[in-house]
Length: 222
Image (cartoon, rainbow, N blue to C red; front, side, top):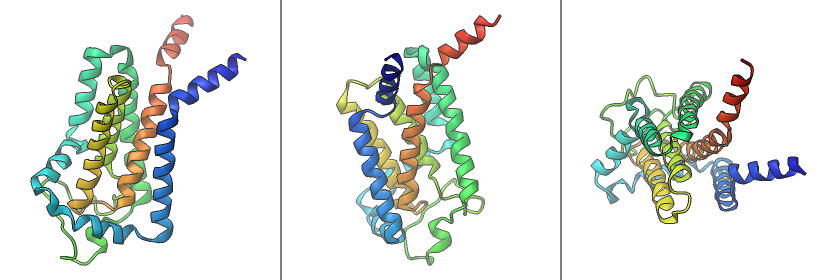
C-alpha cells in the first residue's frame, strides 16, 4: 500500500496531468516534423517571419538565454537562495545536469546548423557574439532554449505553482526564445522543440529527488 502511494505521489510530481498532455502533444508534433521531413521547410517558414518583431527583440532573447553568459542560472540561484533555500541543492544539481546533458548531446549528435546546410542568402541569419565556426555542428539540442526552459519551468515549480497567469508567462518566454533561435537563423524547429522537452524533464526529475533524504542518510553513518 505504501509503495503504491509513493509511486502515485512521485508520478504526480514528475508529470501532472495537464503537463503530461502538453508533453505528449509536443512529442507527437516533434515526431511528425521528423517523419515528414519538414524540419527544413518549417525552419524557412518561421525564419521568414523574423520581421514581425524588431531584430533587437530576438537578439535580446539570444543574449538573455546564452548559457555561456550564465545569466539565467545565476538569477535562478539567487532567487532560490533568497526565497526557497530548501530547494537550493536541487537547483544547483539541475544546473549542473543541464550543462552536462546539453553539452554531451551536442557533441554526440553533431548536427549541422542551418547556415551550414542551406544556401547563403536563402534565409535570415544574424550573429553578434556566438562562434559560428566552433558551433557549426552543435545545432541539436538548442542550449539557449534549454536554458530558458530550465529557468522557466523551475520558476513555475518553485514560485508559481498556483499562479496560472505567471506559468503561462514563463511558457511564453520559452516559446519566444525558441522562435528567436529560429528567426535569427541558428536552429532548426526540432532543435528548439526537443530542448524544451529535455529542459522540462530535467526540471521534473531534479526536483523530484529528495536530497535531504540522502543528506540524512549520510549523516546517520557517522
